[in-house]
Image (cartoon, rainbow over all chains, first blue to last red; front, side, top):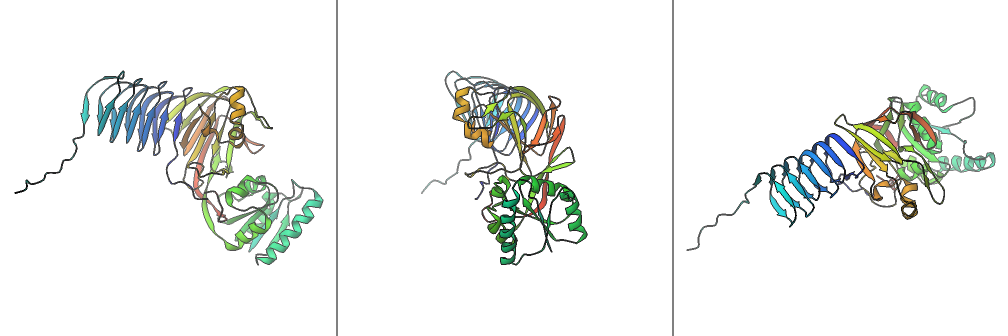
Length: 120
Length: 270
């Protein structure tokens, strides 16, 4: 049987508490408590029960829990209704649902626009 | 030279004779005959492996159960040799390696498709190919999970974690009917799965996943991946490979990438 080449998902359930640096090459889902750093090359999903005191680096992130720390996302950062970020964010694209809380500075990557010469 | 270590521990004498006949005819059919030795009370797997090296065997084949293969791998240790497996009984490792029965396993050995597989290492003295389990789950039609306890562990020296669980498994490889991303014994990682406390209804609902160790499919389960994990507490927690207790916590478990040169079939699960 062929095995998928994708890296497996890391799941931090609501009863789990982590202190230190959580690094993964696959998706991460967090419902528990993390103090330290979170780093993934793939997608991060932070559930409503999650409490994170950490700087975060991910490809894309959906935030439904509480984060105290800086969030750096290369792609899309989506803060859900239950999401709360206290810290600076940096992302390629940003979505904030009504009811979400965000306190900090926001820096976004400017999309590369193609410069076209006017037609004569 | 092929050196076959036949371990009849889990079958009756009558069944063993039948199995032995099938084995001899299969080895002859696929032209992989060699020295066939039998494990007895006086000749342990450890001693027979030493004999194999003394006779300069290039391939040592475990004929028996998952426990036979694990004992043989541990007797071989770090020494360079190709390993084969012929299952005599129902076997998870046989399914993982793609060898279903004696005849098909003999054909696989003759074909000699060799994979460098990772091994798990417990306290630097016990190797495992499949998985290590801890916590109590009484098996049966309806699994009966034991009491929850708090486990504390560190992973890759990068973080420490605590959580409440009923049981857990540290997976290098496992049998699976579906395509999956984890439990790949060639990726240089161990997958650590924790079973949370479940209601009776959830236990019935996820009965199959509990019994087969596919905890990641159960809500509220935790899953992490690491090259090295140290279980710090509780003290005295039994860690088992199959039914065999191989260590008690505190315990250090790591992966040794590509250590085992294993003959595998086309239908292997990785």
